[in-house]
Length: 212
Image (cartoon, rainbow, N blue to C red; front, top):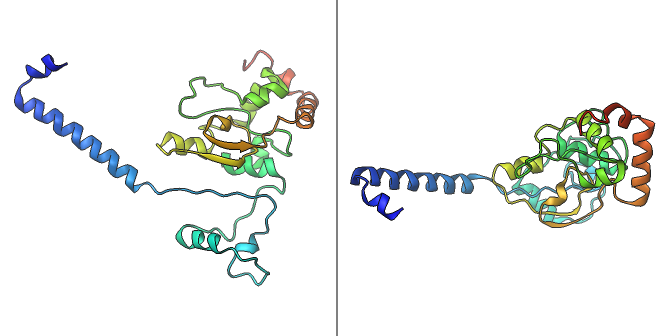
């Protein structure tokens, strides 16, 4: 490479160096302009607890108040479901619960998408373990969560994603660093229920050999 550069004309070499420097500067500027994102989601919390306009009793939450003052607080939004997995799956996928057919805590998002996922029909490993590859692939096709979750989209746009706590949604999100627990499809009860669900809906019969 040194010999190759040695025979380049000075003007061309300067142009290459300038282009590389400009590209590096642009990448640094874009990284600096991208806001940091801290996304918190809890189960079964009354939104009035953190609504400053609500007369309901509020426990002292000074740190949450500071975060809200520095960021965005959506006071008039509603969860898609009173249950954990449907609510989280809907939020992460940006889809209504009936569009992704997640009605309870037994099943979550079956497909896996995002940066580094080379298989267009990749599946959540917990889903496959509980329901089998054929049924899981059929469910993923039905859900059609194109582009993955918003976590996958942040990762695709250069964010360093770290996840902590109860994700409880599927979508192969356990491939990200952090400390995670509580996944759909995983506990003996959930695995049994997921298998019964797949048989009851006959989703396996519909999709065997079609999406695998």
